[in-house]
Image (cartoon, rainbow, N blue to C red):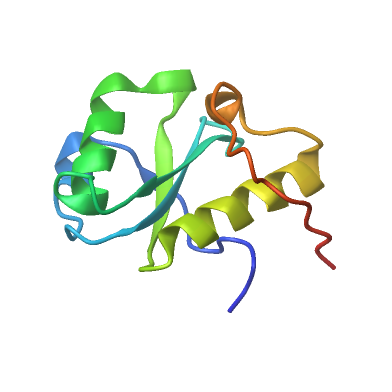
Length: 112
C-alpha cells in the first residue's frame, strides 16, 4: 500500500458525495489548486460514515475546499495520523483545517 493517497481528486459537491458508501475511512480536502487544506476521518460515531461527513463538508466548504479524495479503511485513526504525519513531513506544518486540533500523540514520519 502506498503511504500517500494517490486517488484522483473529485469535485466536492453534495450530489456526488451522496453516492459514497456509509463506511469508515479517511479523506483529504483540497482547494482549487490541489493543496490539501484538511485531513479528516469518518469513524464509529460519524453518522452515515464517509458519505455523511463529506456531505457536511460539501455544504460548509471550510477552508476553501472544493475537491476531495477518500479511502475506506477500518483502521481509520491510524491512517488519519499517518496522513497528518506525512503532510507535516512534506510541508513542515499541518493542513490549515487541522491546526486547531492536532492529535496529542502525533509522531514523526520520515517517508522515502
